Image 1: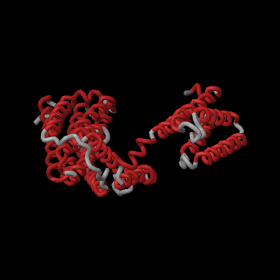
Image 2: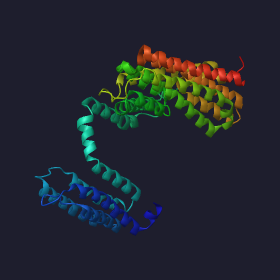
Image 3: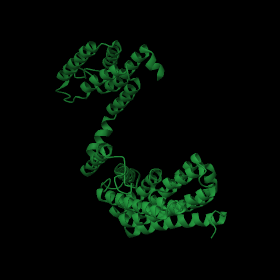
Image 4: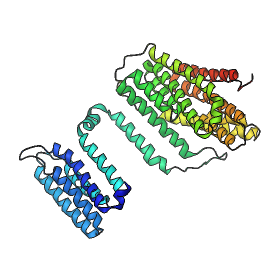
Length: 417
């Protein structure tokens, strides 16, 4: 794309290409006969070319005059087709194509991306209309708007710094965690509706573990409380998120301090194998048929608030323990930090080992302790948000992880009983 920025003639052809891309879709949609649409492949190609030429000229007056001409052509197109097609899609696309042609003179990458997205939106008219009118319920639409407000409006406005006396409660970080949980809950909900209870939830759980296994367990807990019939599958998805979380932890350690990963690799591999067996057993046993689930809520704001409150509370506890123990309690500090975030604690240990402030063996033990301590958060989260059946199954998975990891650590000599 650098060549497109350096050579004006190529940027002009790029503007033409955007017009052709949009024009292909409009040509297929304008119909036949006297009532056909006014703009098709050639018109849109010329609009892109005109926009590109005006932008490359560097004359604002020429761009303005060209824009007025395109606006007049769009008005004429609407007047011609307003009876048979009262929509404004073609007319707006005409002006957008011209505008993207102008933008290619200075920002070709952005113009190309926007042109592709516009062509996809135009081509996806039927499935998008079906999604909005037939698939999505009013409640789901409201939940989607609430998520957009939380992620795109509220989150950027929050201060990205600690605001409490202990210096640990960051409003931006906590709200970002709430947004993550909303997204994971919505992803699990959509996966369950599209792929069925068994496959949909387990796939959402596996993907969610790369973001936050604790948030995934909280989101699946809300799903289990809302639909008790899928509590077993939701619990298996929560356990599966622990599995991918371990995989993610291994990747982080491999990138930062491979020596630590070699020492703790066997306990992590054993615990991952146990979790995989446990999760798959929960999916296969008494699984309901994979039929799309009925419409419900993508996420529950009360459950999100409760989850963020739990994380904030455990964060305060962990920071208090670190202050109380002082610098000598490195491993206890890893356990305290692991209550809030096992990955953060593990990376802290690996960083100290890489800097020579800690031996690899002690760092590996700290990673293991942080991982086990993190289970103390997952169990109450599952019980509080998911109910008794869900909480029991996820807690058993957490105990299985902790016991298998600790047992393997004793067997390999990392931990001396």
